[in-house]
Image (cartoon, rainbow, N blue to C red; front, top):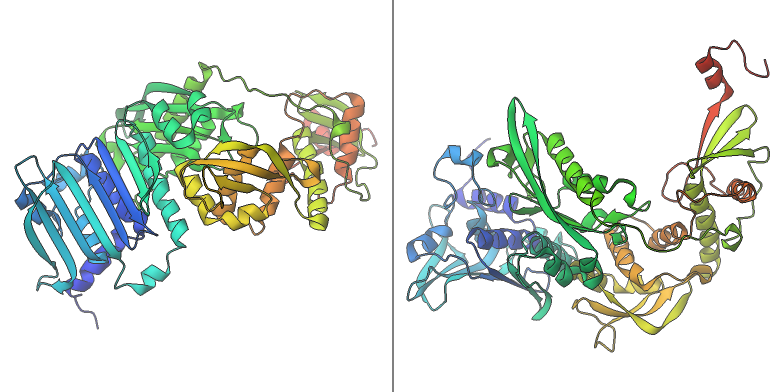
Length: 567
């Protein structure tokens, strides 16, 4: 039998669409603060966020009548008619945000002041329920300066299944930290402060300079190797033309990470984990990035509201565009042009001595009849093997050689550590610091010994500056202390069965021959022999092919010959 749901059930369903986890609450409350033109936003989180979340701002507060309406369903200051959905210039239509948060929590308390002599406090408790499905609320006077504070306690108190589905408390806080970091970087004009269990983990100055925000999040190395840019490009769709404005800050290619999580983008003010735009930024770097590395940067887009739909993703991680391909192309071109005018010369020396690299894996060679006959563009080795022409990617081949030798050593003896004397200082972003805190045991199993500054027992806490006292050194090849950020991200991603494997792949890549390294005849021949001795010679550790083949029949057809050299 089909029947109408009662108001309380409908309210809970609506709340579930908006409030999936504590980070969802933080997104909604931070965006409300930004819509109110706040200059400072302070976020406090206890534990994983289900215990307490508090967001305070100094933006435009609300009068008593507006404050009372703000916690009721279908009430919003952002829309006056249905047509406004196509042109809304705030951070999207969120009429369900505050009442949905209230429906998911045991208590929501809103304290606000629009600049008058006294403020207003509105409290919504989960115990009471009115006949129309709204929760009971109380409205009373309160002392507060101009602005708004929202405090949410006991999130998912009456939803044990949702609460049990959350990750560990440290992992949930890492999600919160990622959200706040994203906004802190894309809104450098706003001062952000994040506290976890009473301890400050992030503070940006709100100077409206990307460099200052990058300094607060990533430290001096990234901030000093970044260039700002500003561009505008025309895009067309369905006969209409619009201007896409793109600006931000791009770190030089020597500042990279193993994953694309450190590309921060926003669209019309909304910070997003938008994969298409992140990919467009990375594509704009082109060949400037080393293989397997991703950039660090902040890119903001602004385009007409009618060209953007902010409500296509329940968690608001993505947006819809009238022409997504055209927008992505505009971003890629803007990044590429910005990098072409910056001094982005890669620093560091490339090891060329094959004899100093790792010895080959002992195995029967599958390349016995292969002969190197030439090289192409300082990257590809041209080899003759029977009736085939083999093309070997020298960097991918050397990676495979190094990786298999490392893997063999680690499987038999484990990963050794070497002391860093004196201990190195490494700065982690607030999100990476939270991820390290959540995965410290596994990171230390991989060979790192890390302690936060001033923290003798190494328990950490996320202030961002760490002493690295030891690093992994398989086969005596030590990792750089700065690799800690990449290892933390790889471990926390949870998409690899053995995090040691990711460590070895990264280590195998760094000493390998690069594009443009011109090998002599003997060096090229030794490289191919060593590749043939590998257990899996046909792909690099990251899955890219090491060898492509072109058989003689291809040339016969291409040149219109009747037969090949052998008939």
